[in-house]
Length: 586
Image (tube, rainbow, N blue to C red; front, side, top):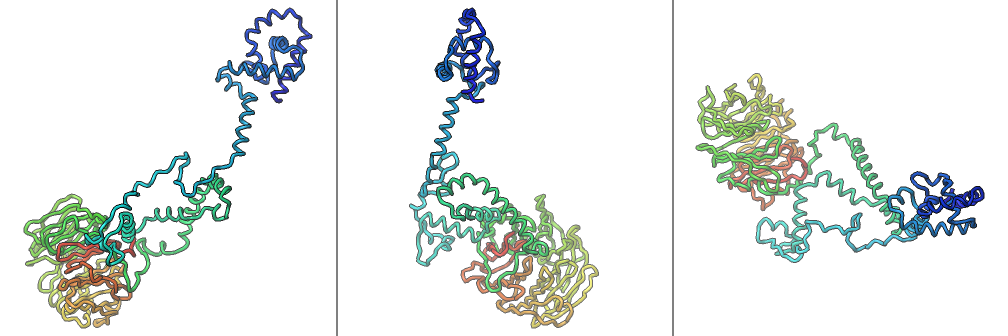
């Protein structure tokens, strides 16, 4: 029932009550006339005690009769409306909220709604700054400075900035261009994390209304209305893409997590970053470098009698700790397999161990049962059980990493110059002055096989690939022979897969990376005498090292656990650090 019908019903009931009552009720009407306006209000809207749907009381009917008389319905309605206008000024806000919204309020709401429907949305400013949902202008990014365009930066004053030049005669660039080139250089070295790539691809994805060719008038309104829905759909699509990627390749099921495909054959993307020991350069040649097996930490050691640890990030490479050992020029140092200890040796009959977690250094007085003048050369077995020292007269000394006591001796003809373990640590290969390679079974302490390195007179270095597929042998003539392990262990005169003759001086060291796709070979007798060799092609990379590579005389080389970095220690006490873009993880 509408409000107008209720008013008419109230007027009709008042006229009916007039015929049933007498004029003697005038005295009681005078008493109730003290609040005629409120009574009229209750007749129209109701009250807390009498809701709008309730029937008016007899007293209210008599009062209505005295107020409006026996008038037509239209006249009574006009009088009631006039009374309502006066009553609205007296009734408090709480009563209005409790009783509801009057007809005038309803009309006003209808008017506002109609105005909102008729009003057109304000067109977006194409060249204006973006605004947030509250209509406020978005602040400029904190990393953008308008003054950058007004300054000039020299790219020739410092050697590190010369790599930013795009032309040989370029001398200076603006601050904004300098920032852009630095950003590009950083992105070359450090790959973007996966979450950044997802966010970038989501931001570049075209909106659905734009793809469907909607008009700017309807498209702007639809974009604002469906913004949250599209965001949810984008998130769902990303989740679906992540799940679908599992079924698009079998690599995650058949290969290790560190596998990233095959390296290109002729070119390698190796970017030089900040020197690993730039925080504190050694005062002598770097005799040994080693990466921690799990943490991004690099160890260096040299003839300045100091072990140093650095945090490797390619940017700051902050120094962590240094340990000085008096009267002990370090000739060789290595980390244990679990990264808990560092072993350091010199041309002494004793050696040292350093516990990284405890920060304690311990002196091992020597190897009982052996009269060795020097213990400077050694390797750590891959299983972490043994240290192998290169003794005199062809002796190979096996020492326990736990007790630091002698375990066994191996004896080969001639002198021993280099040793290498297979991946499991069950077999040991030794190489020496007679040009023969000896294969030893560690468990039985027996020589199980021996073969001749083709064309070798004096062997100087040997390495076995982590997958046990290749054996690389280096000689004093600079020749490197690469053998298939299966063939070499089955023949006394195997033919090499490939002979590498890029170096012309004695090979000082050979080391494979973690997936056996790279072999580093170097000679300390000639400046910049280092090569990276690709596998399985067994060819050197044509673009590395470049003519300006600051390698100097290389004394030690190491790859990080997953080959993202490789470090080169030289005679100047520096550790040149390179980032291999092919490998994403440390």
